[in-house]
Structures are given as C-alpha cells and as structure tokens.
Length: 290
Length: 240
Ligand SMILES: Nc1ncnc2c1ncn2[C@@H]1O[C@H](COP(=O)(O)OP(=O)(O)O)[C@@H](O)[C@H]1O
Ligand SMILES: [Mg+2]
Image (tube, rainbow over all chains, first blue to last red; front, side):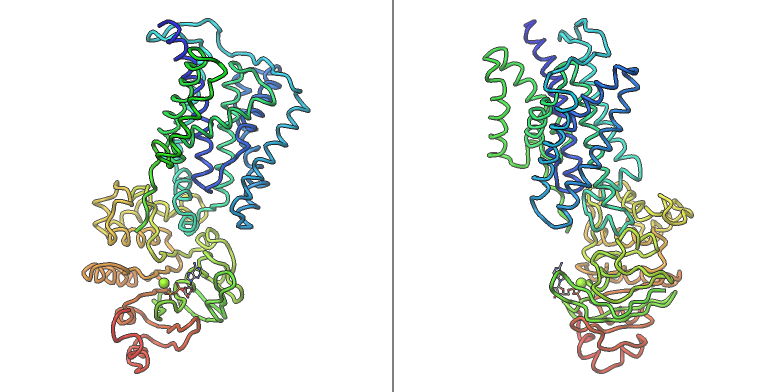
C-alpha cells in the first residue's frame, strides 16, 4: 500500500508534465493545424538555460527569464520553420522543418552543455511528506501545481481578455478572424511562443526530478505527443486525464512488472485509442458552421 | 467612400473578375446583383482582403487598400459580413459582437463607446440580447445571420459589405433582414449589398450594378434598373 501511494505520487507528477507539454501541442494545433515536433527540445533548452542561470541568480527570478527565452525560441520556430511551409501551401513541410530545427537545437545544446545528465537544484526541500495518504516529495507537488497553474493561466487569458478571444477566434475560423481586424499571422506566432514557453517552464519544473541534459527532450516530447493524441488535440481535460493515465501506468508498470516495460502500457493505449477513437478519448468533433 | 477600379481577381489560375469598377458613395446603399457564380462573393472577398486581386485598385475613404491583408483593411474601416455567416461557434454572442469591435478595443481604430454600441446592436436585434450569453454555435440560422450583421456593425465601419444576408432564411426572417438594412441606411451607414432577392435589394438600394460572368453588364440608379426590361427578365422574375 505504501509503495503504491508513492508510485501514485510520482506517476501524477510525471503525468502532469506530459499534460503541460501536450497542452503546448494543442495551442499551436488550434491556431494553425500544425505541431511543433521540436517541443521536447524547447523543454530541454528551457531546463538547460535555467540551469546556467540558476547558478547566478535566485530561482524565482530565473523562472520568468526562462519562460521569456522559451517564448522567443517558439516565435523563432514559427517564423523559420512553420510560416514558410504554410505560405508555400506545403501540406507536410512543417513536419520536417520543425523536426529539423529540433535536431539543430539538440546539437547546439550538446555543444554548449555537453552530453552528460546534469543535476538541477531543487527550489524546495527534499524531505518527503504525506498528503491524503500519498507520499510525495515537495518537488512533485510543485510540478503538479505549476503545471496546473500554467494551463489555468492560459485558459483564463483566453476567456477573459480580448486578445485571448482573438486567439479563440483565429483557432475557429482564420479568415473570419482576419475580417474582425485580427492579425492572424501574429496570433499563430504567438501560439508558438506560448507553446514553447509552456515547454520551457515544464523543463525547469521536471529537471530536478529527471536531471537536465541535451537528450532529455526527445522522450518527453514523444510521450507528451502520445498524451495529446490519447486525450484529444482539442481537449484541455483530455490532456490532463491522458497525462495522468500515462504517468501512473508508467510508474506502476516499472515497479510491478519491469522498468524495461514501463513505456509499453502507454503505447498500447495510444494504439488502442487510434484504432477505436482517433479524435482522442475526449476529442470533440468541432461544431461545424451551418 | 469605396471605389473599385478595374479589378481583376480569381482563385489560383482561374480568373473570376475581369476588370470591374464599382463606386459606393458615402451614405449610399449600392447593390450588386447577378446570378449564381457571377463573381459577387469574389468581389467582396477581394475588397476585404480575403483574396489578393491580381490587378486593379481599391480605395477606401481615400486610402489605397489594394492587396492589403484583411486585418489592415478592417482597421481602415471596412466591415464584411461574409457569405455563410462565419460566426465563431465556440464563443458567446456577446464575445462575437465584441470581436467585431476588435480594432476599436485594441486601439487600431478610435474606441468610441463600445458598450453603448453593443447596446444599440441589441436594440436592433432583440433576439441577440435574449441570447447574449449563449454560444453562437447553438443559435438558429436566422439568429446567426443577425449576429454576423451585428458583429460587422460593431466596427463602426466606413463601409459595410453584406453578402447574401438572407441566404437560407425563412420568408419572415428575410423581411426582418431587409427591415434592418433599411434601419442601417437611415442611420447613414454606407453599404455594398449582395442579395439573391434582387427586387428587394433594388428597393432598398440607391444604385445598382449587374454582374455577369465577372464583368459589369450595366449599372444605374436602382429605380432605373428595376424598370429595365433586360434586368427584369433576367433577375427580377424570381429569386435565384
Ligand atoms: N474558393 C474558391 N476556389 C475556387 N473557385 C471558386 C471559389 N469560390 C468561388 N469560386 C468560383 O468563382 C466563381 C464566382 O463565384 P462567386 O464569387 O462565389 O459567385 P457568386 O457569389 O456571384 O455566386 C464561380 O465560378 C465559383 O465556382
Ligand atoms: Mg456568393
């Protein structure tokens, strides 16, 4: 029982990281029907930039700087890799372009920070504690809280501000949004900035648990992609539930079966969802205009 | 107010408009009539920047807007209520209307009294006031049309383009749409109107243009077009 509750704690924390990266995939998909396949690398860069900064400054000052860095990095990805592909009406060009940029980012990171997994300081105490019978370390709580807060902030922005509504309008009808006076190209760039900012933030959150290194992004990015597909590319609740399912499945499988098989349940689930409900467990078919 | 000069436009390799010229003077209602596929919607799309003209000039309130992106044209004061309504289904009625005023809310255009104008739109469309918090996707077709028109008015536009506002509506609602167009005209709104009900459009308009296969076949005061035998035979027999 004790072990199970620990597994749950870490499963939920890992799951929320998947959820917040998957949420980033949704942001760009909403505005432009494109995904940043370098999302994992945005996370990795966030973690490593954070690591370099945190030696020189307060952790809480480092966080907004890393987020700003992530936003700029995302805007660059959109301008360099996505916009030209959309402009030339190349249907799949953005896939290759975002993957290519991701690889470049990874190579750059290897040259700057090397190939090793580096320890990342935790801003909170390492002493485990118990909430509702679940054993957790404070960093896990911070990961869960931070991820939820990030998604909530974006959601609030979309609902409350006129710019957020412009974002929603662009996502639902690009041409009509343009007629409203909304600069839809800018909104798409912004969605990439927001998406990479979220990933960079997730990188800093997860690094104290996983260690930071140039390799860290690839697997996380892929798993989060699976979560986005499992949960549905347009469902906020979906990515949270999908993230939790995957996170808990992984930690429990690793313990009860074998670490070697920890990725299997999630991928089996992914295959099942694709076969049975391709729009995702919570994916809704968008309301069609009459 | 709006001047279209020798406009050529189309889709990809397909030319649809072959050098058309249309003038919409300030405070007037001008209607563009023509059968299905004549190029009416294409004209409106080229004016509002949804497609890029291949040649010609479009001038709005003295400013050349030819080939500019839609959002800049909207900021210059052109509102376009597009064919097929195109309301934002996942946003509330009020949010849709406020987005119509987006350039005013984001300082792209003089702000004025946005909330007051919202109230005026609700006066014009009482149904929308009742459903202000409802998602636009859950409205009936008629209500969505009202919303699309209301949203365009929220810009406080120099010129309002209305593309088939009565399309697919029950006869009673069609009358309602024309009542609203009249009300807008009385307020001095400058309009370019495309309508399948050519007779009704010529009744409300000051001036009319007849578009055939992407060229202007004739134009003149609405009164005169209504009595033109050729126009009567081709367009005023029945709605099409
Ligand atoms: N999106 C489009 N892509 C290609 N051709 C189009 C498109 N929209 C309209 N057309 C063509 O352009 C011509 C004019 O269409 P349109 O302007 O919609 O006519 P109208 O509004 O007068 O009925 C038609 O032949 C139509 O098939
Ligand atoms: Mg049409």
